[in-house]
Image (tube, rainbow, N blue to C red; front, top):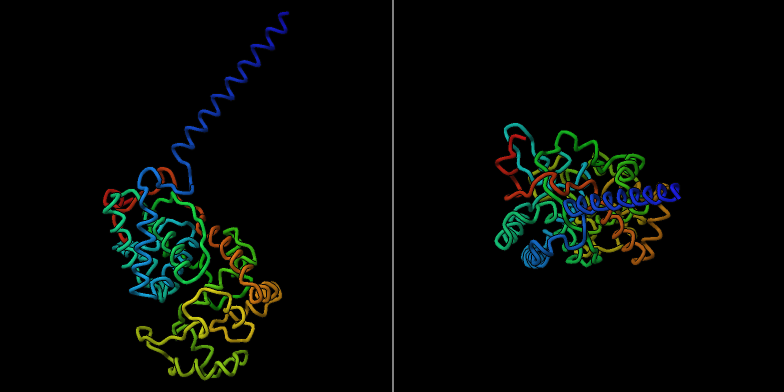
Length: 337
């Protein structure tokens, strides 16, 4: 009888501990739910609609904004964390990520400020710049004819530029495929995901500064001869002026549509960058290039999955970071942190 009582009391105490642990866990989850769908449904229910509307308006006036929003997602989220560090201006102590060589060609940041201002009018200092950066990319993808990708929110903004470590994370356009695969793999993006993400080269343009080493002093033999004349016409100088508007459209067939035409182009040796050529020829990536060239659905599925993983790369959530008032500047009380 005594042993039964002891066992009963032991069971009760174990149950009480489990309930307490569960309550603590729930309390922590309420304090920091991490990334969730519709994070702002209570604090700013109109946030995502405002962002979507602003993206539509800005895209209607300035078509190139959508390319910028898509590039912003990669350049911010791939560098250690999705925390809008990309958007910070330079200070006396820190160089902005925007001003590094690896960020050459990034622009239209003022339009993110326009979106932020519209959101701030409705909900002051509630919605992070990191979430605006991600959601503008999501809606920009749709504006370009790409897939609709449900993305979570709840990111907070970082307080420091990562310019000093940027090159450790962002692969360059002339890196080996091994390096590119490793960089993406570190974020959890596998080989088909990498191939799908590079399909973003289906839209936008490439500045001649990034191309001339393939054209001068001699044209790279792997470039399709039918494409060479066009590239030379667009990039007539061996040493182009970085500030001049000299560029080649990434895809002459459907330059404003995010689609799988990119894969047909690179299989036909019409890729502009070295990484495009390597993607179509390396045995680790070529099978996926061929599959995506044939199936828009397969590309869309892998692209959506990779964008989701990229957008969730090591975000600041809960009480980490801050909600910036202006996307280009850390809040004043944190400026020295």
